Length: 284
Ligand code: NAD
Image (cartoon, rainbow, N blue to C red; front, side):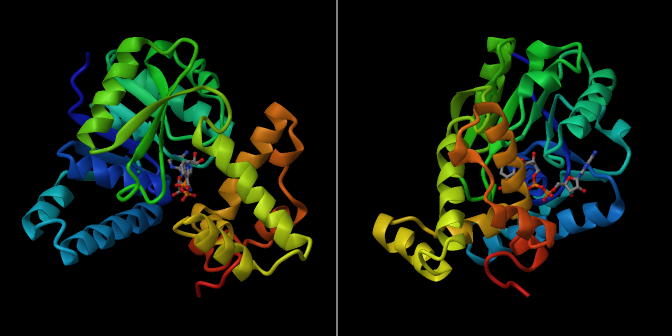
């Protein structure tokens, strides 16, 4: 089983920054790659803020926070990830962009290295096929917010080796996460159930059956969910949800997975949720 010491993370958005944070906090050396310095700065600012919150809550000592921050290297040059034993890709949910990155990483990385995608819905085997090491490619699907959510789905394609799966389960355990094994089908386990539910909440609001507040209160107080579906959509990102729904609908042709017209219009308007300041609710 390859010994994972150095972790590369591609993308420092919502998910990439969280993945980088938990990896550094667990003692791994982490190199974070982004398209530009501004995105890296945003990602690192988010990581510092999150670590500070853990210190405030006395869940982390100041010395551990400082040691965690020292384990980061940030870069806009992919070559700086070449020493990584494991690279986790968390860039935009777009297959051509992911395939191009996998192809470059395959050429760059040592033969033992594993490459994972944090994709929510894309076909992992399609990324694996862009490389010459498909048995060392898998999905490693984290949940938002990564530092707080305990689950990781390890996604096995039809060619992922058992050794790769075992390495990823061991890696997840070192991060303090619980791993579950999913197959390479859109939505894996959790989103296959969650996305149709979220889309149905949008349809309910869109058709005027209930106010957004009542839909959210209903699921919070009636089902014990920590937040209602429309609030959750704002946290996940409406753009991300829209992409996922399109991919799931394309694969299964199930009308429950089709993005509702309102979701498309909100995305076109740039109302992506919390990250853009406006979604179903206002965050400005
Ligand atoms: P995001 O938009 O917050 O961040 C994406 C980041 O990737 C941006 O900072 C962007 O600059 C960067 N990027 C784009 N192209 C790049 C490239 N070629 N190389 C390096 N960086 C690049 O998106 P996110 O919500 O963090 O989602 C990232 C991935 O994680 C997606 O595949 C998404 O499906 C998946 N995911 C999202 C969630 C969620 O709740 N948002 C949960 C699990 C998985």
